[in-house]
Image (cartoon, one colour):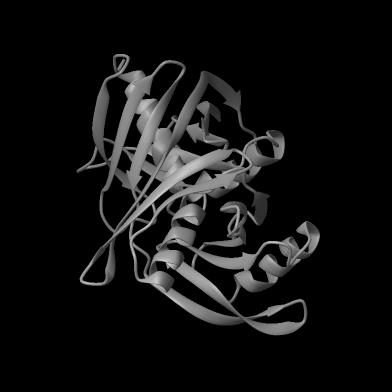
Length: 269
């Protein structure tokens, strides 16, 4: 099949957006094929029509992805020729989100700025997991379609982290599971994300839901709203949380988006 796609860079989290319609049943195979041939790509999303939103983004594992949402928003704004320094507010239908997601895109010189209102976590809890052969209580933040385990930076080397995450994945019902190496003193995050359907474990240069997970955890732990700059290899994401009656009421991430040129590829499954 011949597919049209665009490689998009939302704060270093390289995302391939397929804009040719692909049957849902084939999307996981197509994603795995594309990831094997484009090692710089960290995740794949598919553009689909929506009955109630500007468009739908179906991620390769059915998970919710904040950076993918920003990528789609910027792609729509470029398609519709949003003028320089103008802002467009979009309602997007995104896999893993229980309802439409608000995304605000501003065109600036050389790129776009995107802000996404993230779905609130289903749970922020402590779970005992095997870590280096020892059962260890770790913070786990669960979103629709993806959950993240927060691990102190320096606890695991990269190879051990990958093996650990793959072993943990079956313990969680979500299609995607993240292991977040978090260095709180420097506010530096190193995210590893495993997607079950494609059996892919990727060290992401920037993870939107991972950044949101850290902010949600810190908010729950302190009982106070947060404004964070979560630094990662691909750049920094701004994360803002709000509380209402002592409970997390909103969670927003902001980052930059750069779009590549539209291309075509023949996919052979």
